[in-house]
Image 1 (cartoon, rainbow, N blue to C red):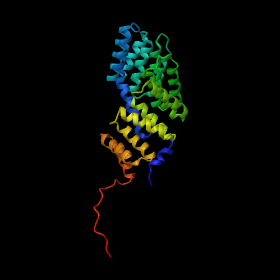
Image 2 (image 1 turned 60 degrees about the vertical axis):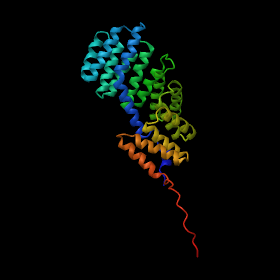
Image 3 (image 1 turned 135 degrees about the horizontal axis):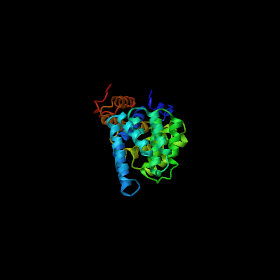
Image 4 (image 1 turned 45 degrees about the vertical axis):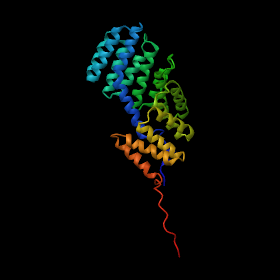
Length: 294
């Protein structure tokens, strides 16, 4: 029996591979925060929104947290005592995240988001980081409340805002709010159309709700943006198979997932398992033999 159709009936909207991809993205975000803040805050300083000394100190604090989480916490506490406000709270939350203390990190980011005197974009970033920390900590209601706070800020319709909608969609999925997740994903796709992860999550959610036409269109867009992502290829194969297009489209997608998985042995095994469920590839036509004369 083909097991692929059973995927549509499982409870979790995202496969373990996609959840792993999301965790890797969150880890990468934390690793890139220092450089991102440097770019963002220095740009703000040049436009007069943020004094250069704050941008420099925040970057230095994050660098200390990167090297040693406790050093970052110590510097954040010192800066808070000197009036560092939301920016000191930002560094504290980042350092706690580096220490894998995600519930505490959420609290630190929330503290920064509540502080007066910061611009809307900074407040939204802090609340969004709080939501992601709460989500990693497994506190879905808290994550939802944090993302709600982030999106209550007067934000422009930019890539960053789209990513907050994407993250709230993840939290809404975890809370079994499929309708809300669909709304957030639609907004994310409008604001961040170049992000393949948004199209992947949208396709997966559509598949889980039996909207295979949307699932197929969105996974194909994800594949256009990131053809060699094995998670996208795996999902594409599943969607094709469930749509009845098992060969050659599903086969090609599963083979691409296997070939691009690198060291992800779990993904390789799953791609091979799906391939094994497909009908055998047709072999070359055999030459006709002599007629059976009786």
